[in-house]
Amino acid sequence: MSPEALSELIFNIANTLVSEGKAGTLTADLIPPQAKFAVMRPKDRAHGDWASNAAMQLAKKAGMKPRDFAELFAAELTNADGIKSVEVAGPGFINITLDSASAAAVVDTVLEAGDTYGKNDHLGGETLNLEFVSANPTGPIHIGGTRWAAVGDSMARVLEANGAKVVREYYFNDHGEQINRFAKSLVAAAHGETTPIDGYKGAYIDEIAKRVIDEANADGVDVLSLPRVDGGADQDGNPLGEGDSEQREEFRKRAVPMMFDEIQRSMKNFRVNFDVWFHENSLYSDGEVDQAIADLRARGDIYEKDGATWFESTKHGDDKDRVIIKSDGNYAYFAADIAYYRNKRHRETNPADVAIYMLGADHHGYIGRMMAMCEAFGDKPGENMQILIGQLVNVMKDGKAVRMSKRAGNVVTIDDLTDAIGVDASRYSLARTDYNSPVDIDLNLLASHSNENPVYYVQYAHARSCNVDRNAAAAGITYEGADVSLLDTTADGEVLAALAQWPALLREAGDLRAPHRVAHYLEDLAATYHKWYNVERVVPMELTDPEARGEQADAIRIAKAPEPARAAARLKLNDAVQTVIAEGLDLLGVTAPDKM
Image (tube, rainbow, N blue to C red):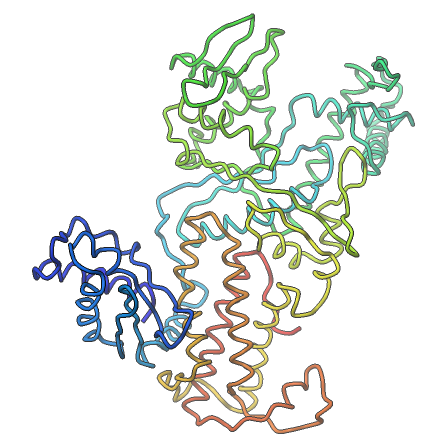
């Protein structure tokens, strides 16, 4: 019996007690939904397999003492199929012990469902637009964007596992001053000049500048001979780079697509596939910025002041109003944000019921104005628009921080990280920590194959279970004759309980937008499995060289051969663990190797 089944049973008992007049002043309308009845795993196994605080939740509404109300629940639970015993403890906890067959039923449930075990459709009917990474096309994706790639794609997979339709979207900021600075930097590099004070520098700038020159030459264009206007210098003599010119424009139009291609290649190699690659510039060229402003003006949220056009965001909870068209006639950056949200909600293909933005730590100040804009369009902040703010990533090697900056040139990029530790370790290490918290990436640790490396620890559990399958096949052990009620040892029970918790965990990870919970669950399941493996046997093995290591290390362990029905049941348990680990790793975009 699963925690969900127990929760449903407790919910039904509460309603039965009401209908039979045994629940005091409690009425059916005061009983919360089934999902609110938490069924937890006690820390102390002496307290049973599962525990519920349902009586404590409802006692006040019933006008009864929690322990007295808990006794009513216990009497009903004791008569339910699959329950061995029920005990009321403390202030009113209901401790439940299942019979072995009921506890072990999860094994067949997992094996029958396969990689769909735990998946559900409770988010079905919603289209979630999940925008993540969205790094400016002025350089390769740095480690912060890499974290969002790992977290965002894992989140999309988790949401899909809960039935949602997810549109993965990348927003290319290909309009505005950062692109001009990028082009100026390339021109300066092409002429061997000092980088403009407001520009970008690094080896990648020199490489792209050379690629632009080579491509232009192949097209019969001598890009360096095109008209160029000197941008002068600041008061300290630092070059500002050339101004508007044919040469700058030629570098821009050739270099930006090169960066697009590089970003798309890096994402694909990182196992992240976007459904939509949205270009900011299209919001201007297609007239969507003007239309969005016109819509807000019609709603009474636009006014003119000091020669500029303002969005009256304070009407909707922002701390100050926002300029959207500056007094010089140029659009403020926020104008594109307004148009982009409107586009997401009203596009012809896959309009978003929920627009989820995954932004960096430096965007925290954007939340107020974004939510105000959401409300101004008649939507619900926090529902139709959700903003997730990620914290910083620190890359460590040999105990020292590896610093990064596109402009300083010492960039730690997505490709640097994967070259150092691989895609599996990169994705897992970045997704396993709550995005609300800073994370340290230890390159030395994540390149190692030790139990201290979290991804290796989980992957090794999967590989070990595959090795059990190979040994069982060689010994002629199959599922035939399996009796899962014989999975009655303490170690068996811990693995069974861990498997039973997967559906609730998966649902919670989706509702809370928390893919890191999947990683933590996998690590707990792997630890439970490794402990089980060390004390229980599927296949008996004879003693060999006591100094043996590596693949023969298992041969050192001696255990009495289990009876056939128990061995077959343990094989099924082994394979159920294998199934759930593979499913969980896939949700994180990580492979599940059968050998290590």
